[in-house]
Length: 277
Image (cartoon, rainbow, N blue to C red; front, side):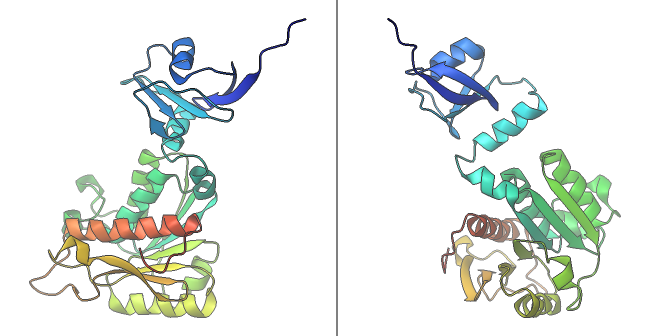
């Protein structure tokens, strides 16, 4: 009497597949997509063969090929590693201000697959914005939230983006971000920075807020750091380098701070509430 060979349940390019126990990554590639140039196992591209386990996620890519919508989403998700995407896909993140910081934070979170982004700004794209903000010349004059939403949808069409063309105030901040899991403060106006901290601490004290202070000029990259200021309020920056005549906002340092913000938002989504980063 023979016993049926044990099988493993894995996913190949987002599709559930059963393979025999002992199957390997390269064996699956040979059977399912022999022309694939890249084999990714659980978010990590491998150049050597590996025995597969039950529940593994395999993505097979042929360079230059445009995958189907489901395959593309699976390929994007595969790079995050197990357990990450499920959490970020459920998250809703508010971005208060869509200039140099906000547009870069939004791009990073969209590429990470955050399920919903709420973009809020009242301004339009101007020529002076192009030295550091994630917009294009042909978007000059457009509302920033509309232009940014269009750019994000080109980057990742599988997330929801809500664009709110509104000037934020102490009164409307709570209702605007009531559904958000984390809010990123991305203003360049000190008064608005103050107002969002006050409004969030009063009306939404359980919603984490990631703010910025001190990112102008060309100071050392490593002077920009993330630290906790109050309960559920984190601050990114060196705390000193405010924009002023002779010390403007430039793309490299703004980008460093935006990446700090996006990374802190991601860590909060994943439940990593360290005091400092």
